[in-house]
Length: 130
Image 1 (cartoon, one colour):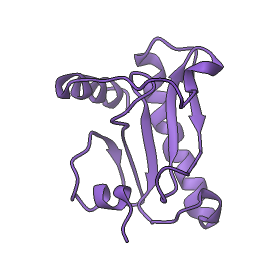
Image 2 (cartoon, one colour):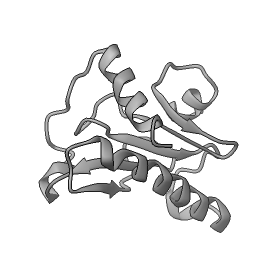
Image 3 (cartoon, rainbow, N blue to C red):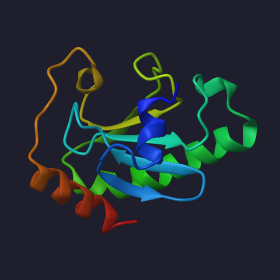
């Protein structure tokens, strides 16, 4: 059965796209920990990130680096934190989260809520530096 991320890739579910190429996709998390919280995924559906072939694994992190560099100047943060947990969706993915401290990337924190317009503004900020 296709993961929710595969359904996003296939255009079956709406999402807030930041960037895409032939192998990877970056989009906003709809239940973010911080403004700008982004998910970066390979288009190849593999559950465990460490089971990706070497080329896809390295490409995923290169793609994520490009997105993170566009994120940092747009949000009030010291760094863009990175998390690979992989339990909630059976499709390899990276969380990029603007952070000022280690507790900012605690997934037990209440999630933020944004309007569609706010999500679009966040996308425009990040895309302006890609």
